[in-house]
Length: 180
Ligand SMILES: [Ca+2]
Image (cartoon, rainbow, N blue to C red):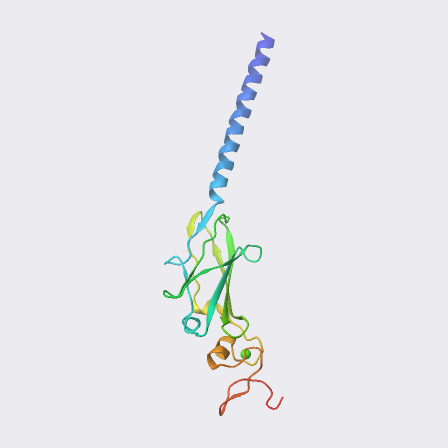
């Protein structure tokens, strides 16, 4: 009888372990489902390109998106000139607070590429589809030569974004040292 009791105890112990193991498998399976996040970007599945950048002529626009900044992969977005949208999708992101970094570059036909603006956005991702949108106020417009005219303004004015500007015509527009 004593031997039988021990056997019963062992069986109960084995069943307990089996139930615990099934629980662990179920929990880890749920965890795997939650960690796969598909990202839909913007209400129209894209990011609206700022109007002033869209209006630039004589070159092409490149937009890069890094999902999971700064460690994520930098993706070249697909540019839809007609709609003024840039599109990309990121998958396999964890449902947690995630940083996104957008960079907008203009490649003039006759000059080297100029980075115009960037924007950073922190989003609390949820399992399933998430939306990412950038407002005009999110953009930081760059000024490579530090003359207080943004690279975008310089391209609009036809000046060199890498050479400080003081005067265009009769107007003092930049902040470089006059005569320097
Ligand atoms: Ca400038």
